[in-house]
Amino acid sequence: MNILLAMIPAFFWGTTYAVTQYTLADWPPLLLSALRALPAGLILLAIKPSRPASADWPILFKLGAINIAVFFCLIFVMALTLPSAISGVGMISVPVFAMLFHWVVSKKRPNALQACCGAVLVILAWMLFDPNSITLNPVGLIAMLAAISCIIVGSTITKALGSRIHWWTILTWQLIIGGVILTLVSGMQALIAPEPYANVINQFSWSNASGIIWILLLNTVLGYSMYVWLLQRMSVVDFTFGGIANPIAGIACGAILLSESYTTHQYTLMVGMILASIAPTLLNVVRIKLRNSALIK
Image 1 (cartoon, rainbow, N blue to C red):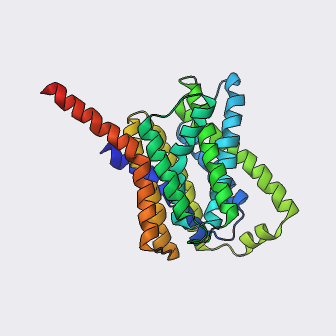
Image 2 (cartoon, one colour):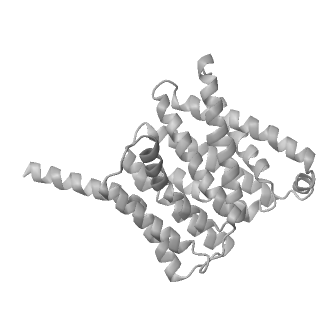
């Protein structure tokens, strides 16, 4: 049951790419990011009001800038420049980059299983993203790598906070702070290059409205609220398996909404990357169960 619950926010996050391309294709990424972040933060603040301590504002500003302002903008750049399935599957390589980051920065060496699965995932990704078999926008690929870096750095900062700040306060105020930053930067962009913003206003449609509602309410308010709520009640293992819904949603929505299609070989590589990302956790669970069974006997 826990895994099924964890799949809900992961699934909604995985739909971001296809929904954006399908309903908001010509919108500036900065505007989309601001519309996703600031209203969501204000809604969460209304649901459960909170006020950070004076000493917590600097770290919340840093988190809002990295986790929300930069990350959301990169996500929408990916959504508008890369196929949905590629974005969804590519983001599951976060554990590999996190492993390398902690190895270099914290001198925390991965175990043999983690290193092996990480190497397999990198090889499969190299084969999937091969320019000879699929043409991908380099801007989107750079945005993907930068978004992964934001996740790793932001998660490291958040983890370092420990129990100092309540999770809900962190979530609410990083959305508000990041949203304010995005709103200001988006406003500056509108002054410098007003044409895209004018087109958004002049050509606004029900399709655009539905896309904004989906991304704001389901992907952000519901998705992040469930994430925070589940985080206090579930294990890392459950979250790992629940995260499978993210790339699956990217692949499915890309096929349904955007008519994306790939060869059998490419789909096999995608499945291989998904399995490689969860293999260390899966094998560790199996090993623990076998050990417990042996002790019972």
